[in-house]
Length: 310
Image 1 (spheres, rainbow, N blue to C red):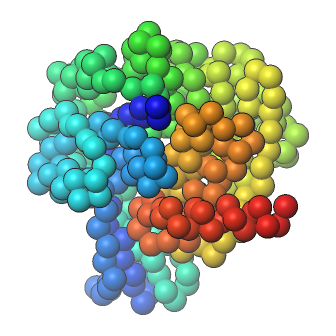
Image 2 (cartoon, rainbow, N blue to C red):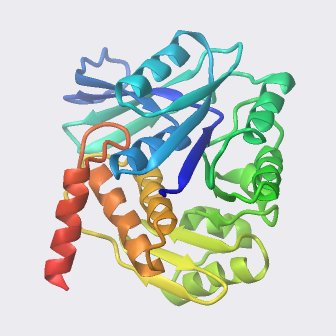
């Protein structure tokens, strides 16, 4: 029986991606090729897990007409979802690709204020959701306590499920050692945790392993951008290089990586294969258009390419 994967998104968004001939200050920027997606870390993870053939439930905070858009999009994408209603409207994030420079600009609002009763309801929902894995991904919304993810991790661990966390800043620091099964920091987030630059691969391998040894999490997946990713456990630490593809966007790449990794682990794949699947999903995301727009056909093609090159 496939593992049940639930995702938690406390600060979702409507993601708009568009293209401009040139982005110039003080000018009206005419755009084209607009695309709208449901966004937010956990929502992206759920969508990619579903594309891979897994069972994923997206649990998220929903408010206003923008929240209803997210609900409708997930319904159309056949992603099962549940919501915790909030008074504020979900945010709208905008990504603009500048054709003249090849640069991508991302505008990401902080999100709506979440009341204590609202975030407490999110924690209560975690006590009820039936899942083997719970993936919490994304930033906290204004009004939420810094230790929210730490509380969530303890709730999930107490129920015997595996808690996965991908966040940053004080919310990340506060959750370390709170019962996290899998932690996914970026290199900059790792450096913030250890308090110094970690420039070379041997140091990155050592620091990822040390996080596990210090009890921050049972498993650490450190993403390194063009340098690939590291997966550390109590027994091993492995590195896999990035997969070269033509990049169109960076939106949702980390969430897609996490989705592939968690799906692989939930399917009991060997650690190196699960890590490779994560990197393949991240590569599939950046070569598409939209937020975490991963297609199973692209994943299969990249995996076949890797096998033929081996």
